[in-house]
Image 1 (cartoon, rainbow, N blue to C red):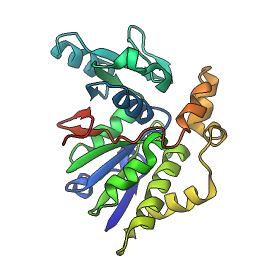
Image 2 (cartoon, helix red, strand yellow):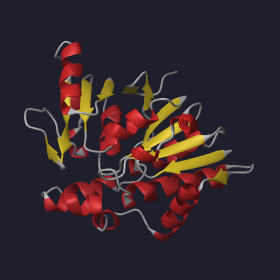
Image 3 (cartoon, helix red, strand yellow):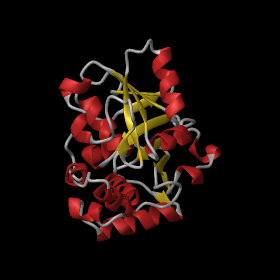
Length: 239
């Protein structure tokens, strides 16, 4: 089994993703929101790279979907929801289709779209993701990063997944250099709101008055569900 980690969507090589199980991570906060939304009954999430793409997608859906997302951490003007997991309650999203665009996370889903399977991961569903991908096969982990650069929070989450797979595997597991580095970083950092607050992504949230999201995003194994993207639409697992 081989595990490859990409620190940003820009690093992703399409040929290396094709045929693999791709795991997309944006701890602060897109994939945390996606896991929370699906766990609370959202029927589908349509990731969009740009605001215009999001508006066009909702129009194609007949205007009935909720618009969700942020730029620079703040809810986009005119959108129904921002990018805080606390907003994605069952009352808000149960039974609804969501169109989501974020600064970093939705770009990572676009970069991973050529994989055999695409999973959404965060600390919220850490063990469930490890259980899903540890069954075997080649895995690529795509970190959303921060505006095209390395992000510590996503890399630590990737490292926890790498270490979890290695712990469960009875065979040989090979890692690319980024996966080995992520595993080493995970060994040095406990999952906590304080850890997230020490990252660039966390500090950016504090700067816009949304630091309370960090403790929530650090709730490991809050859910036992692994949202999956089929034909560029994220839903609960099928079958």
